[in-house]
Length: 224
Image (spheres, helix red, strand yellow):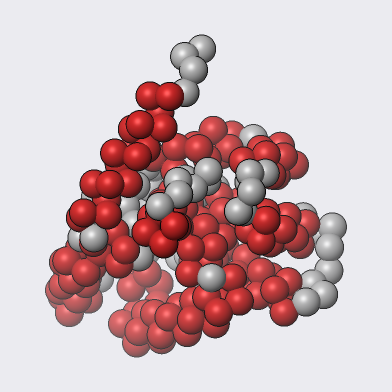
């Protein structure tokens, strides 16, 4: 990102306001950092570049979903963001993955904003060990394997060998650039303030049932 950021033009400022308003309606919620992040994207890429970028994002996710599944795609996006230290995307996409899994199976995902909060302070192999343990329950075998390979590729311990590996490499390369805008803006967010960047978050009844299930899960956990 630029060392001396330029000011947005009137057209660009108007576009960013309209974009954030449209996103909040489509996604069912608004994050207080959305405006700052969108402004940085437009500042760096310009309007034409931003439209090309959004088109690429859409096509890239459409390429990932048939291979990884809708929920796992969002979770992998979130965990790729975690590796680079971005809570805004890390929490948001893991929330989307958890909501999608709950929508499709009525099961709570072990990887969600609150379960990964402490991981941002750990070293790479410690993060991998914690995530591997979180995904050890039956039903998460594919995600556990995909995540394990993604981290090994990220750490240079594995060269891509399969179609999945190639997509995981692309995901990390692309998303590291994407999240620079949140880092430049100094975005700091807590799990409780995370919002879903996927339209699944607009389903209010689903969110209510999900939050109720999470609260019940929390109530059953032993107090230390």
